[in-house]
Image 1 (tube, one colour):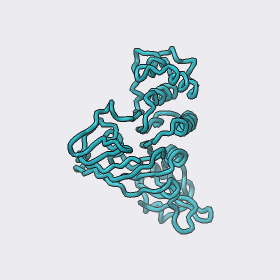
Image 2 (tube, one colour; image 1 turned 90 degrees about the vertical axis):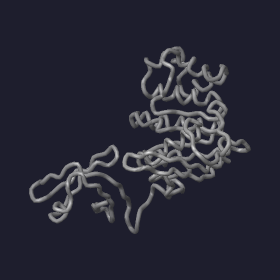
Image 3 (cartoon, helix red, strand yellow; image 1 turned 90 degrees about the horizontal axis):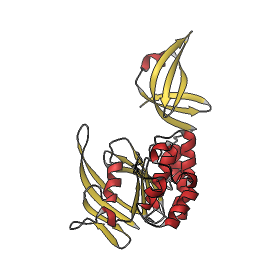
Image 4 (spheres, rainbow, N blue to C red; image 1 turned 60 degrees about the vertical axis):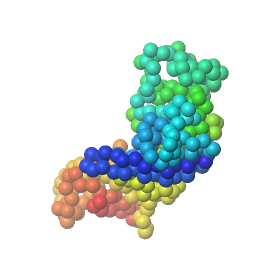
Length: 284
């Protein structure tokens, strides 16, 4: 069990916030942290890793990582951390990047086999694709056989096909190494696929803590689906008006009647939902 009860003052773009997180996380669980940018997700990971200070307590099993009198050094915490930017040693081969963390050659070979990197073990990071670099970073994070794996939007720079492939590998490694994994992500499909528990942060506070289904499938009444987006254009086609809306990585078109065309403007944040196969637009 990981017990977290920490506080830290954050300097936001508009105003200061007090990050206050109180959580109990079961061993071997996969938890996703999500929420708007600046809500404290990455800061929480860095506090867990010992890369930032905070007040309060972090207890992992019987070990105290943080309390009012002590903060365990980064190298003494049983963690693996995968950053967005890979953070590989560019002058070392793939294999040497792993062996720098631990001289366990058998473990390095096993991880490279699992992630289909064995044939690239002598290559330098500069010669690898983004997906290959991310797999190397993941393998390197597991070379210490950590109790806790921290993932800070590790797949955000990759295309959809590569994201899906690495999601499978992350889940396989999580299970094989019996990890407790905490991942920051903004991608609903990724969260739904990987996490059994989702924690939503807003203004440095937890506003929701539930299963992926409960958090992501937030339909109301007879709605079949609901998505949030932004109007990026409104066109007139004969007697009809068509709103062009950006939703995540998709662009959709919704027909507006005369009244709606006057109600909405470019830049408006909207919710798109459907009832009985008829799309409806609502201002946020």
